[in-house]
Length: 295
Image (cartoon, rainbow, N blue to C red):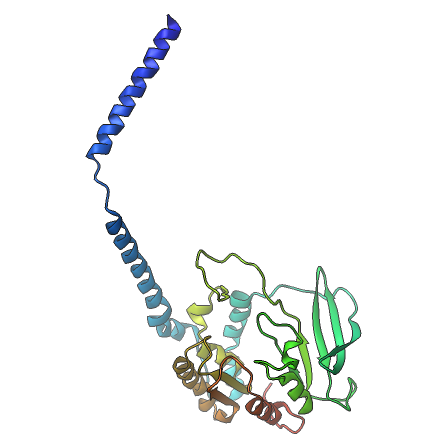
């Protein structure tokens, strides 16, 4: 009898629950799919507008409270941005503390007919690796200017010595009398950044867009010489906006009366190195005959 009663009780409860939800379901009138999509899109526009308001429209006001540049002299200028440089390092870049843990290893290495050395420095669990080469007729004992040649995404230290977007510019630097150090960077790495499907690689740096737009970052480079190269068909940035940002950045140099130290080569090409303007600029400012006094 008890089991029969229990079965009847369970059936009764199930019937009452089913009836209740059925009635509730009949009374509920859900939004149409179109209305739901429109609501979601409206919210997305709201978030996008807020992001633009905060990062773009309110940037100048926020930056005015963060930057206090003194253009009375070069020394005064560098002192005035020292706190911003420290913040860039500690908040935005946040480099890890890597300590040398062994001797520098060097071995003969040849890239595209250029004889140099592959150097490797132990830094605990990882190593720093690079290709080092000196101009013909010189060696590590002779004082020559050195250029750190970075290779791009999806390339290797060999790329700046080859024909392509790099136009063998590492070779051209050697021919012009510069030593070259080409650090090894990752070609690519599988990463999970968002649900956004894109062929581009993106990074997130804390505090970057909120206080360190390009023309402000340039003030951390100033008074050092700076050459920018950009192709009008380079999809990394729209060239009119590059020119707009450059003109703002140039103000730092103009106010210090050293406007000859900043230049831009806006060419008709793509994302590529331009040999002529690059070699000419570096020969002037860091060549053996240069007289620049900036740090």
